[in-house]
Structures are given as structure tokens and as C-alpha cells.
Length: 232
Image 1 (cartoon, rainbow, N blue to C red):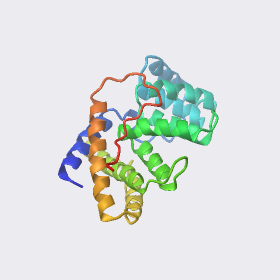
Image 2: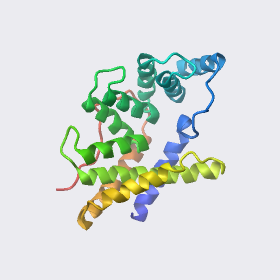
Image 3: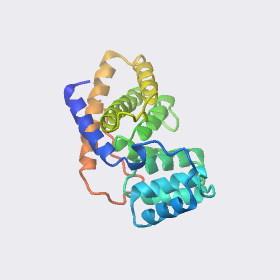
Image 4: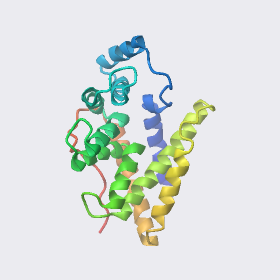
């Protein structure tokens, strides 16, 4: 990958890690106490999207609170209004699997795309899988590779940055290797010309992601998409 693309991704990783919140460290193993849940709820009520996504995750998994997809959707949607990456990914997953909502791959892709537009690894990996299998649209091996390439680089860069902050942090161990293996698998399906095109698209994607990161959060429609178009 070109040095300019690495620089763009490094800048994007700074933006992502800077607002990771619940993504910066793994969820605690213990079930939160009622007092901890109440404290989290108060923070979520103030409009903090990271805490809203955390509260949504508790309801999604039924940890410390009754399991409720309806409540999970409520909090994920609030967090998604400010483009929280965890919330966007979970909303995509819930629409894809029909958890608390009617299953809709079309709606799922809209949320995955919003996450991927901001270089969220979860959204990128989900889109890569959809492009690879051709679910709901024709197969697109180039886009499948672009998404996995970006997911790999963002995961590697985020892991390095978090490790520099806390050498004991091993949150991304294993996932970077698995993503790398999948990226290599997808690469074998492409011609040299397609790989060159994919790298161009990845750089364009990174540039657009930085422009999104520089904008104040709004309440975008889940139909919003800024993915780059391949050259013809």
C-alpha cells in the first residue's frame, strides 16, 4: 500500500481511537451491578453516545439488565445519531439477523456502510462478507478486498496505538491475524490490475473518511452513503 494511504489511515486511526470509548478496551468480564447500570444510564441520558452504545450492549446481551432487543435498539439508535461505530455495527447486525426488527439486508447494509464510511472495522468486515458472497447484489470481489484491506490496516494501526498507551492491552490480538488471512485469501482472487484498482479505491475511501471525521455529528438518515465508485 502506498505511503500516502498509510498516512491517511494513520490519521483516521487517530480519530477512531480518540473516540473509541467502548472499543478501546474489552468489555469487563463481570456482570455490572445495579448501581453501575444506573450510573451508566444517567450518563447515557446526558446524550453521551459511547455510554448509550454501552447501555445498548448490556440490553443486547442481557448483562446486568433484562435481555431486550427493543431496549438495545433504542439506545443503539440514539448512539448512531452521533455515528458511534459500535452502535452502527450492532444496528446493521440486528437488521441483518432480524433481532427485534424485521430482517432486512438492505437496511443492514445502510448501517454497515455508515460504519465503514468512517473506517469502522466491524462495518468494513460485514460489507466485505456481503460483497464477497453477493447477497442482495452482484458479487464484487474488488470491493470485498477493499473493505477487508481497510479493516486490516485500521485494526493493525489501532492496536499499535492502543498498545503504545497501554502495553498490557491485547484487545486486538488474534483479530488482526484472522483479518489478515482473510485479506490474503481475497487477494488471490484478483488480478494485478484489480489489486491496483483496489488500492486506489482504499486511498479514496480513507480520504472521504477523514472528511467525515472532521464534520460535527448530525443525525443522518441510515440511507446516507459516501462510498467511492470504482473507475470504469
